[in-house]
Image (cartoon, rainbow, N blue to C red; front, side):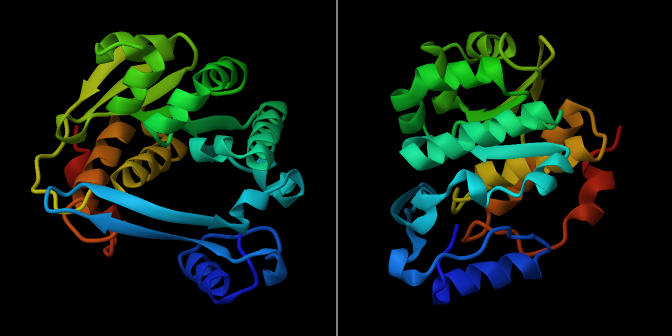
Length: 250
């Protein structure tokens, strides 16, 4: 959700230019500014963020385009939305709509801190609504209460059909209808890890919506994640679809 201000206009035009439809009208800037985030990276490729959420905390159920959701293959929600009262209610409403209209519901745990604060709720919605979970190794450890990633992955597998657990250069684990698989990563020299998880999830969702099996989708996600950590910034600059045959060869 954005405001009717210069940052909001920038976000809207940027999304539209990249083929993303942004539903919902911008809020009048009297309600507050569009959210912003300053990301600081360090020499070890890690990052920290200074975020002002702005009007994004005012996301409500009437901002959801029901027709667009009904026509989707997968609804993808961020765990960060569980941090606010309004956005939490909106998230659950969207999950209910997805279930009602047979749309697959995918969810990312977003951050270990989110999991720490809302672990019981995350387990509840996993069992009630979710089909697909994305998380990284630290988020899984927090959720499952164990250092054993395979055991934690099996916990997720008891709740949802598909779970994808990223583990930096070690690739990822995939729980696919009760079966556990390891998918290798792509060793690279990372300079900025900002956007790695989003690139991975985007690659997986692209794969799943285009008929790839979960392991092949995860391999594509691993590849995109490995590419984005080699540049400064969270967005890949090139068209990577031409790489698919070479990366996903049988």
